Length: 151
Image (tube, rainbow, N blue to C red; front, side, top):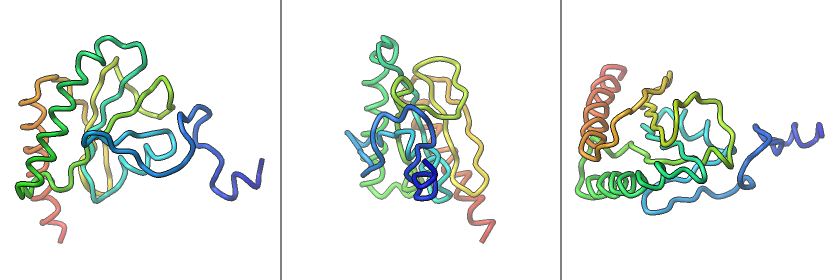
């Protein structure tokens, strides 16, 4: 028991969906687990948009296509050299299989962690692809200005 804790193999939560391992990205969406959730959202070099979903959630299934579109558009913009979104990570966590410490008001729910050292998440309540892309671009521009001011 204590050896596992000291070795860092003791789970942060009781219900991680998978064992600690290589991060999985599907269609541009980083699949988070209890093991890597905090590490990813608190990375000071990345802005992270996380969709919180649950198994057997019909609204999550309905929104999955739109969220996939957001991920593809962000990837396309990155490939086109859209510098504002180069630090953006699009992620998802299945709450029914993974524990986390965030408060969400339903599923699907989105939260955005801006780039920087002291990250506090922002709720993203719109489900419009265009709104989400504009939200990411606006916040990335603000973060770029703030990051430049820190240097």
